[in-house]
Amino acid sequence: MASGRCARWLAAATLALLVGAPGALAEAAPTVDPSAPTPTTPHPGGPPEGRSPDGTVIGGAALGERGLIVPEGAPALPADITAQGWLVADLDTGEVLAARDPHGRYYPASTLKTLTLLALHGQLDSAAVVTGTTEDANAEGTKVGLVEGGQYPVALLFQALMMASGNDAAWALGRAAGGPQPTLELMNETASQLQAYDTVAGTPSGLDVAGQSSSAYDLALFMRAIVDDPELLAIMRTPTAVMPAFPPRYPAYQIQNQNPMLTSYPGMLAGKNGFTDAARYTYVGAAEQDGTRLVVSMMLGEQAPIPMVAQAALLLDWGFALPEGTAPVGELVQPRPPGVPAPAERSTEPTVHSSEDALAVTGGVGSAPTDSPAPVLLVGLGLSSALVVGLVLRGRRRRI
Image 1 (cartoon, helix red, strand yellow):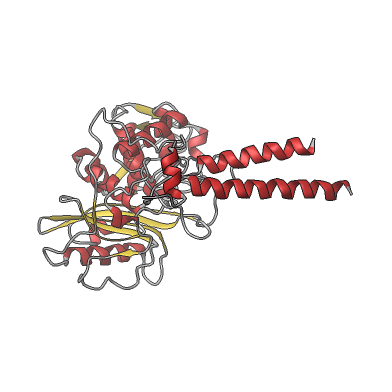
Image 2 (spheres, one colour; image 1 turned 180 degrees about the horizontal axis):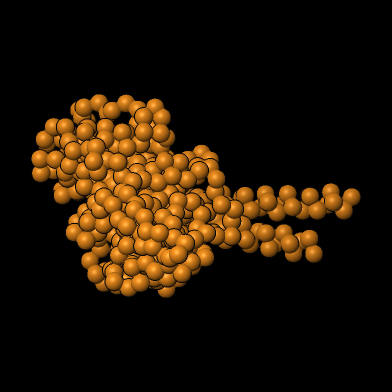
């Protein structure tokens, strides 16, 4: 019986090494896990690294770096930038001016609501009325104040979502779109269409859930799509709105836009902030000065020594002051054309090689570098054999 278990371990170990051979398998596509404990801290050791489904770096190879990415000869970056992942880019040319870990898959917090807006706005009738529920009223985190039985036009819920970051508005909009699963499918399909492959939506509000992620690069793609849509930009720029009364208990009240840069930064177009314990502070915004439109996105930042919006202003200032002709470090890609599928994931089939390939690997006449998995398989078989020996010996010790 013990020998049978060893044989099964050998087969499993060998298969794992075969599948893991070079050119055989990319990392599994990230997914959310609602059953896992809710994250309460940033990723230990840093966030996972994002990639497109086929393993390439979206926007250029340089953007795969995990540290600072700055053009040669560019002015010094501003001090006091606490964000661990950030990006500054030109919205019109698509040129990425500078970045730090732009494809790191961070927790996005409420900046993910930019994707919620993009995914649901075209799906819902803005004049439709949504009735508030107990679940809306009991939503976790920031709320705009929906009450059970309250009547809310979809257009107002979008304003509440983006102006006041209402998690209750996010749940109400998701329910209007068909419920949690259809809403998340729409969000993830929209992210994929924009080629925002670092993003995995697990909630419409951005509240933390295991596996949910976005990146500074993807947030810039979302903000560009919003700024380029007059209706969505108008929602982001609305200064105030009025939530309706629900007599006799609830009077009408006003909500305000929570993006302070709308009134404090010259040429500010739109912005969205976020905070959770796991994401810390996040922000994405866009501004226009002298005909140039820039986007800044920041993830995993802190409010000290200066607030995140002040850090965003410094990065925008740096981008607007960049000398003309400075070489970009990457680009913001365009959305995939309608009907064009996402890049295929790398094959899970092990590569079949000829005997000549084996000779080349083992140093035969005329050998040359090759991507043959033979060395890996030889090592794997050795490791598997060692595993079997170890298991047999351990089994013997147990019987003693």
